[in-house]
Length: 126
Image (tube, rainbow, N blue to C red; front, side, top):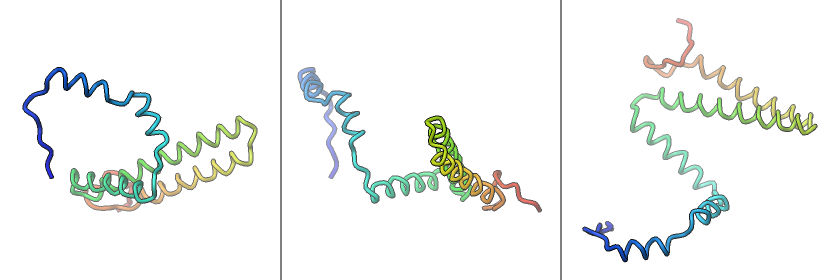
């Protein structure tokens, strides 16, 4: 089924659409309350991978994505660790910092694995 696109809009139609549209604040609230199912999250991730593959026909794009994700996860875990430490929750902070280190370790492993001739991320020894 394809949607038909009208050739023009009347001012009355535009005004009616504006009056019946949800307020921006309501849209934001609905997004914040949205439940993210496992299936939805996996589909979003898969779509992003597929889009990257369509744009760059080389596995290095997925390696770069993995490296970016690992970097973000390490940074986020460090930030949460710092916040817990500042709140006096030292034991909890240590757990978050340890997990940040695990992400950094994953990055260390990834940078020595080549995915092809175009892998500019690899610090492989010949």
